[in-house]
Length: 121
Image (tube, rainbow, N blue to C red; front, top):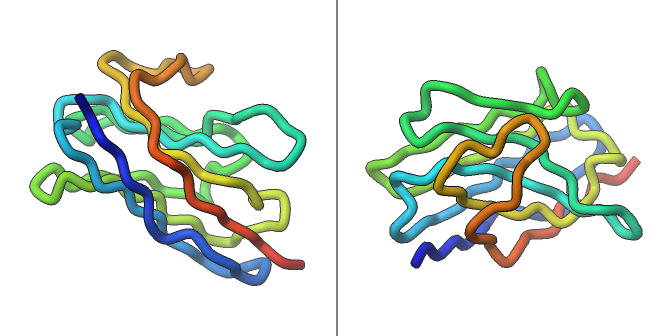
């Protein structure tokens, strides 16, 4: 069983930065990802990282602005979000999968509870 707890959401002005963290228990050998869901929209795959940390994936809309990383010694995954835009406003979910998410973000095995990110214009 893998447990995921997200921290770090909040309110920020456009152009600002936030760092989300996801504390995991039992997830060090899992591929980790971040999804987001804006009001009235479907959940969107945002980024993922292999368990070794050597390979990452980003959806086009966040490339160059977001960085996913992991610290297996601390059992934590991070999502550094820079140059935030109002369209980044969403609930962000940490996710764990026993195999790679692929480019479409295959369904995770585990989800966190989500953390709200609001970007004001």
